[in-house]
Figure 1 (cartoon, protein in one colour):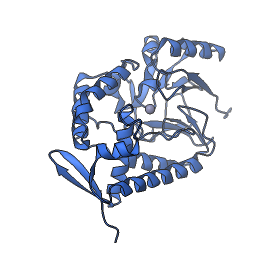
Figure 2: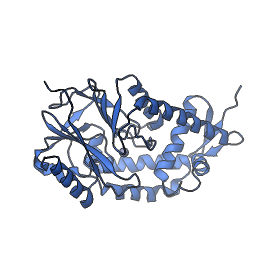
Figure 3: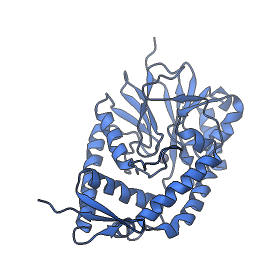
Figure 4: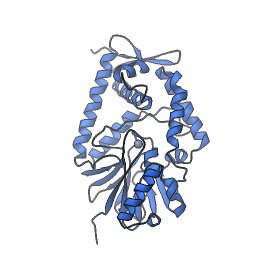
Length: 323
Ligand SMILES: [Zn+2]
C-alpha cells in the first residue's frame, strides 16, 4: 500500500490585499481539490496552466472541499460546477455560497446592530456595499455534502475534518493524522496573523459570535493534535505550527493588554478604540480593524478585565481597577 500523500499546491493570483491564494490538489482514490481561488479570469487561467502541468484536466476533478466561504477560496467553483464536480463543506457556508437573499438580509441586519454598538453606524451602508463587491468574486453553488467535525471524506482515506472556526464562522481544516499534515485554509498563516473576522451567526441565532475567542480555541485545538505541517491558504507551509500558535496566542494577550491601557482613565467606544489602535488604516480596512478591536474587547471581557455599559445603543468600554 502506498501511504505517501500526493499533495500539490497551486498558487493563484487574487485582486485582494492578501495577495496570492493557495489551493491544493490531492491525488488519492478521488482527485480532490481543496479550495478554488477567486472568480477572476487571471486566477482561472493560472489554475488551468498549473493543473495541466501536473498532468490533469479540470474534468478529472471528482470533488472540491471548501475550507470556508471567503471569495478568494471559493469563487472559481463557478467555473468547476458544470463538470459534475461535487462540493463539500460545512453547513454554515451554504447560504453564503447560494447567495441566499434571506441570509444576506440577516447579514446586513447583524452588521447594523454591531456597527451601532461600536458607534460607527454611519459607515454601515458603505461597508455593506463593499461586502457586496467582494461577493462578485465569489460563486453561486450548492454544497452537495455537508460535513462536520470528525467526518471522513469519501475517496480520501486517512483524512478527517477538523472544525476550526474563528477566521470564518464555517471554517474547516483537513487533517491526516498518520502524516501529521493539515490543510489549514486561513486558520494558520506563517507571514501574517489571521484575522478573526466578525461574521453573522446562522439565521435564527441572535448572539454575536465571539470570533477571537473561538479562534483561540481553534488554535489550541491544534496543540493537542499530531500536526507538524500546515499547508496554508496563503504563503509557505507552516513547518512548526505549534511554535507559531503559541506566539500568536501571546501576541493576542499583549494586544488586549494594550487596549486595556487605553481605557483605564475613561470609557471609550469601540470606534474610538479602533482609531487609537489603527490611526492610519481604520477606515480603509474597517471590517478588519473593527474585528480586531471587538475581538480583543471580548477577550478582556471574558477575563473580567473590563466593564461594558450602554448608552443610546452605543457600548462604552472601561478597564476595571486591578485589586
Ligand atoms: Zn479567509
